[in-house]
Length: 476
Image (cartoon, rainbow, N blue to C red; front, top):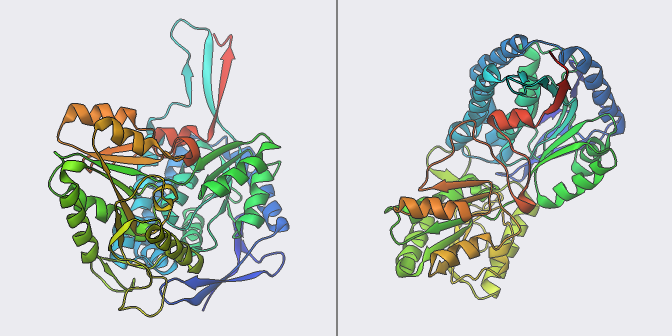
């Protein structure tokens, strides 16, 4: 079993101040595969002190210095790409092909894009040509970064890289359920030669290190990705110190499919939510289908779900792996049963593991039809490979059903009518809308409305999250 008990603080790998071992379970085998330490307040304080001391000099480094270091980090990341893929496949249970092409590739893409944005960003600018005022963007300070297990390096890169780029220092707490990718990234940062104290990593759980970060008086900002429940607790904990809080939380996306949608819209929609074993906050888990094509869509969705294999992460090919842990598996099973109990029609999948797997937290790709938007499976974020199909008659009804949720992260719509696509997309209450399967480009802002969070990650918008704006009058 791997031993990864040490933390990265002030440029060194250090032992925890107190032994608090935590055995991380491999979701594919249900066996422990690595031991980490859960930090305590002393560990968190040491990391904060290191970050605070480093901020004095790091904030004054030139943009060119930061770009040089980030470009070194990018080269190291590319060289150790396959190590990252293996780490993510192990901790998350993601099939190796998917871990490489989607998960690890996302980290590389974010580093590349933030370097590009940093090269173009103006940290100082005139208010306007005739004004005597001057605008300066300055790093906000010491940042607490709390990342999830479902897209580990994706979210780490979306937080760590813009913090580096803007001159902030930081403490990263990766999910204790998926610690390997964060620890490997810390090794890369150390190899790149970032100054001691600029980046620190302390493993821990939400109740421990997570709450210590969110309430710490010397942390100026918290960026958190995770559940809406945890996001509320972090906001309350951070309130006493009036620190900035950036939240990317849960979702219950809708995928509106009109009768004139492209031929594979339904099948693509099924594949979309099943990827990553359904563990994506912006997955369109409610498929809204126009009534004139509803029966055909149900047949296609059921057929496509049955074609999706479920197997070991170590195997190559097009399939999904397990969900992250036992509690998540049991939650998904409970919600599948609730769909049956509330009268939805099960047309694919269902409760229990697939018949070819006796061990591991594997869930069958599941599709429900005849779902109403007041059922639990339509209201709650399941975070598993479970799709609910809901019929609609009019454009207005589709918009109303899609928006009838406390969430607002990602919505999708499929239609060949460009004017309708643009009209409907503007009416959907979500931070991201994807038309006809067109994914957002690199550097596009990502974030949600309502209980899906606040703030935006990615691109220039991601840099702004880590900056204060100073107005100076009398500059001339």
